[in-house]
Image 1 (cartoon, rainbow, N blue to C red):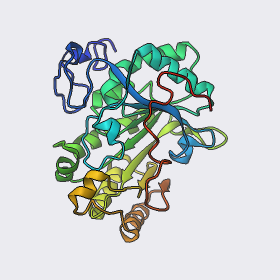
Image 2: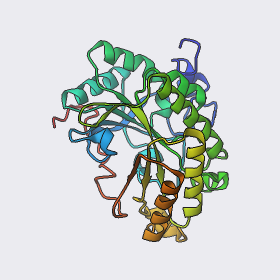
Image 3: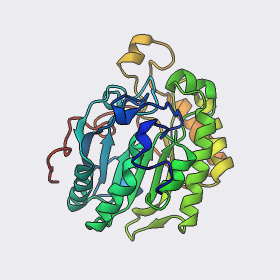
Length: 314
């Protein structure tokens, strides 16, 4: 990996994400993602509300990275994604956090929005493994990833927990401020599926929790059920009968309530059922869905730096 994308030299002119903004992060400049040279984390704790194969009963060891390459106007994690809330820590501390989460009984290490810090992962994961980390690594991503990064992470990441947000590039431009979301997400998804297949496909423990696999998530947005159905078409075309998670947890944030319009409401039962029916019609056999439409702290944990600097016992 010395000559690949994910190296310690990546921050000289950053091209870690598909934006390839070229920010001189190593020199203290900030990328479009909001990140500079220092690693920033917002929370590290057990999380019990991922999909059942990820959280199980014991919980997923989630590590929330500050900043995000996307700028989704409706983001529920806006404090950290666009507000860049978090604490600067060393790569050594990231290694220790992963080991602490394993000691707390985490089923896996769940790296949430690590795209713009992916250059740290090869060394950090290798060091954690050398010091006794045995549980799987989950890469929890918006789906806006470079193929090269996915390929280089292929032997390090055990479970891909990836979004597929839009089939319409216009929605990506309007809602996430990127010009090419569908094109990028399709290519990244194809590579993720290929890496799982190359390593032997989906694998689970006796209790049903996963040690290897992929789940493709899609958040249904109010007024955009048509696009959601087209997203499912794209997933089926690229990945076939891959496990999917169709979510209805959208709740308008303060900015969406102030702006009004379609995104100033929850998804209706009719919209959500239409998308679920389309998934059934396509033939998806492993599908996770949600009852109710409101986001509470189960879905959005408090970003209060829990576990970042000091261990929090379960």
